[in-house]
Length: 146
Image 1: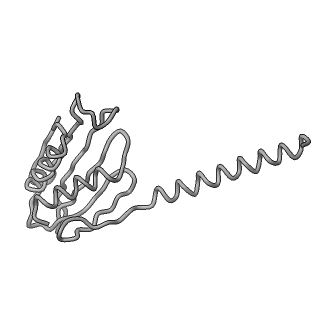
Image 2: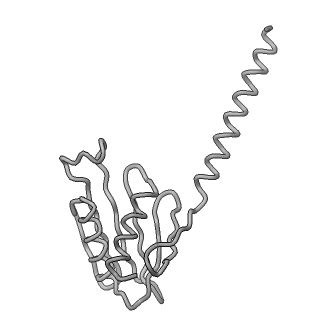
Image 3: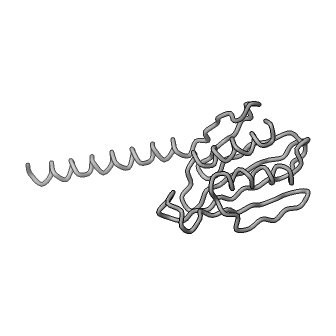
């Protein structure tokens, strides 16, 4: 194999790698929609956080209490919580002796009042994943009877 064909082969391989990376990146950035709970509440995961809305009959503090209970049920330790009638945030961490993960992670749960609903957002840090927020969302909606 001469120098020119080796260089062309490397260039093609590099171009293919870049194209594949861009294609996978585009697919990973597309929101993922699934339904949760008995009420089949739609929730969208956008690679960073999962969000859904529940009817206004559930106030922010009630939704936050359901989220806190769901986090505790999954073994998280509540490290911070704050809330008003308009919004609530709960930050929960993996237990320090937890064998579930090698890297400590936290979940940020938010309930925010909107015009006709309460928006729920669930985010896992430092490495986002879709499964854990969806499990927290399912447990939260179950506690609300949805």
